[in-house]
Length: 298
Length: 267
Image (spheres, rainbow over the protein chains, first blue to last red):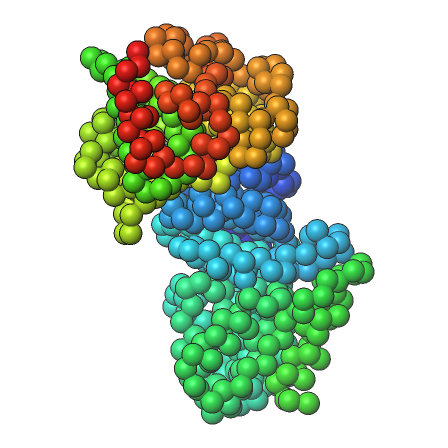
């Protein structure tokens, strides 16, 4: 995902001289091409995220389109107020790019668990929230964010997520779920780096699967329509409450659809042991067994 | 320019007193301490109108002095003077902290420690294109408690943001005590020097001295400039001067009358 983001942004920056890239001292072996090609539009702001967000806001006030790249919770929670007051409230052209969503850096410890970020950022005004699931969704999301005006949040995994799509779909639209497969088994909706896992579950269940790379804005109509006969939606995400499951739950609570929601997501309890992302996610039930259990009701 | 800066400062203070009295609002002390600085910046220094991309940009990082900024903007023709009567009233755009929905306000502020970083971004952008735009950020001394200010200080020094000017309203007070008692800032000039800034100190109520300082920007080639402006909180009204209470209090009708009379009788 990181590489897809970097190459797409590079291409966008060749076309649009307003595009800048700031990094919070991360991006080794990923951001160098941008740095080399556009040295006057690249700044390593150092390990100082509050200032980095403020600098991005100042650049955007002066007409630039700024991407801010950092890790896990550092470009959001560490500087949440700068994101809220300076970027979101002023509707500035600043996109936060967070690498390491979910537990993809889980083994590094609690500091590196980005498991509330979507819920927190989604509460801020004026900000588009993207959580792509593979390199193609990442390239698409990056290109869309480079075209869109206003604040954005791009939540990426770590980089080793397998490609699920064969390319960028011609009909992908911001705010619309992407239908990956249809089947009678169940209706699954996943977001972020759970895409490959969700596809495996959908194949095993012969289920319908939607990928949801845009969480704000999001029109869930297609998912609800598909779920009407099944009577149940399984939401899948590498995030705690506040993300996709919560968005669908809010929709179902506001309008009675007669559809049950089974969220597969992290709980509130911190993970306190080391392990691979798959292992750690499994501790919360975000794994194949957890999805199948949610879908089949067993 | 032919603006009578001391007269402008006096009019700003008069508006502020009326506004906070009418709205029963707080923060009059910190508005009075920056009146002369605002008069110099807007009356003598700032170039370009709000619709010009290459305009100079002023950020009130101490957003709680919004009443003084609105009064300045009204006196300088950005908003109608009559609108000042709407300060803090239902539905008014004149919020208690600086609001970017008011013409001439570049950034909404209110939480301390945000403005200097944004000023850094503006200065970076200007340098990239060779724009003559200068960024000026007015901070309070209490605001310097915020760690984000020092992140920005380090950044501006490192990147040698020559078109950036910070002014600190050194009135010696913060919300719950004297700055020297709450979190000592001294040696303040040395701190900024160590961060790579060119530092000048000035009497923040001496308008000719303020003008003279701004006319020599940048204070040192290749460095961001900072003006430590020694001020008196509540300046211009004897019973408000150097008093923590007037961070919070609002003058009633009788006090307002006395205060306005003092201003008229002043220098």
